[in-house]
Image (cartoon, rainbow, N blue to C red; front, top):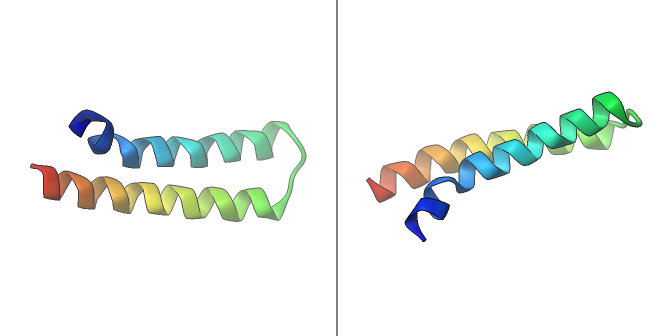
Length: 55
């Protein structure tokens, strides 16, 4: 369970990257850009905070 929790920030960050890929290869929409920005920011912050608390 700790390994999944440690990687939760990276999983959220990768969801943001997937949103950017959908934007690039699919239909361009500002909603995808904003959601990818929010997901990547939350992913980075979550990764830093979770890894400081677990270690």
